[in-house]
Length: 514
Image 1 (cartoon, rainbow, N blue to C red):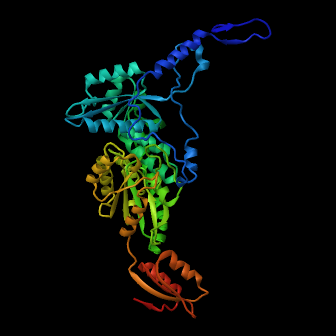
Image 2 (image 1 turned 90 degrees about the vertical axis):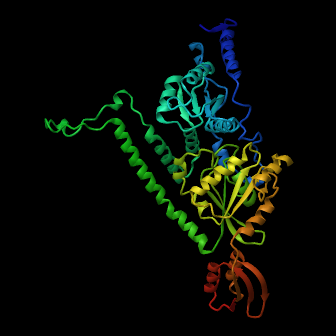
Image 3 (image 1 turned 120 degrees about the vertical axis):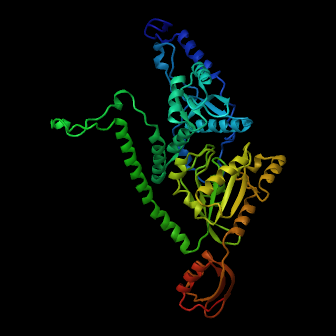
């Protein structure tokens, strides 16, 4: 049999692959493993990815997401077709490219490493990264014709499948670069949209991501060959003769119309989700429950901080944009006041405008909150850019005037010198570690200081058979004094105006009101 050696003859003959076939497969794997990846580990991701502490809850969502994983280092390419039975799956290999001008090399490297983390989160293997210095990106090929030829040689030598640009490419730039390198070319926006489409779980999240993808796709439609031909117009098919034949529509025009129709339907669907959110928000406002929104850069530790404070059990993963759907949990200040804590979608530099528009309804949690907890990754090499990026998006959703608490998370990874530098960026910032619990108590104290204070003093005489009123008062107001008299329980408290009205309506005869 071709490709096999027979060790023995007879009934117990055993067939095994020939040594030459095995050697070819192992040699191919070793050659692929020897390709240098872009950096040992992307700086946006931490080495330690264990979240087994009880503060993160049961993490059922994380188990579900990890149920299907791609495996690195496996390949479908074979030198010999007779080895087809040894074929295995392979990750998509990508080469990153970027353009910087002047003295912006350090910032360009940080941005490219962040793009490497995005590509890894999307499920690819980064094998190389290239930076081109020029005053402006080339309008034709983004990096210039000469560099495009060099990039094509690197792609061919490394066996890359895709080139990812650290910018949003114009449709003409993408086509010209694809013609030069002979492989697929995408940009930063396409990678982020791909991650969002993988991680969206709720109906609203999926609709928002699809809307953003269609807005991105619309100006990038391209026809090919017969797909650009025009459809028959008028009633020519009915044989009505001259004067009835119009030019018709091209296939690309039909596609555009279908996309516009689908986008309109998605916008109506997203708008239809608003009443449910408004009802929940109105219920909180009815009882004057203050709200705190956690905003920040992606992978800064927002969900970990929410779990540390509220034991919410929200998905925590060492990946960019691990959670997209907002999560609202309730918590209490050290003095017993109830408030809600909302985890929101993370931000990233050069966040696609389509995503900001599509997720505007989700970002309402930030706009309608009373306090914003701005979480920054203290161990990131460029925390200043994180601060600027998040504040720009907060400004876009009209939340710039809200009280803000800047929190430098991952304090257990920061030395004293780094803390001095960060303190220079934000003198009033709080250093917190969601992993060890450092600074969490100080953060809760600061939240209590900035939340709206109860401004109505109320004294009630509650009959002993109305324990529901006392329970409601303890849950929604600050109890100043409690006295048990013959007629019932005399309670003096401080409450917000809506809570005070609710308590008065529950009791027909309030004793006094200051």
